[in-house]
Image 1 (cartoon, rainbow, N blue to C red):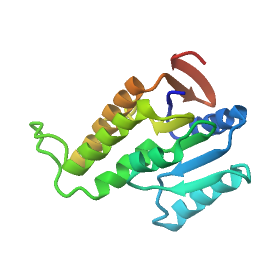
Image 2 (cartoon, rainbow, N blue to C red):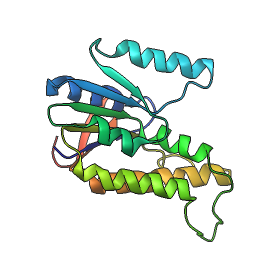
Image 3 (tube, rainbow, N blue to C red):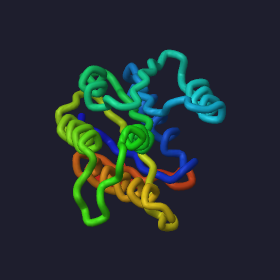
Length: 183
């Protein structure tokens, strides 16, 4: 079954929607968690997410090598939730030295390679694959070059993932809106 991208803003209910789809699938569930617990607040957020999940779900922490982890974890008769693509992008950007020049010199190699690997593998994955991502382009234009670069790359990643997925859902205020492929 081709992948399903679930987009939304902060606290929109996108993760909860992905979890409800996973429960409804009736399949064994693996959550690929991309967040890193770098401070106490993030540790608490991660713990809250873990506590809210059903007891039988597996969690695989993958801050960087997402395509390789998906290749290993996605399989017929299984459901995988990736939560979330935006934090994965953040992790990749943390390893980037200088930003590309504003004239468009291209992506840093690590970003380009990891994004290309993800987009290449998405159509080949088996089982139910639910990708969660933040929609960050609905707010103000960031006032720093790094902020604008992140916003732009998150938007590009979401567009490319949406093109590669059979289904895309936007969640706002806990309400899912099918953008592609039905409910």
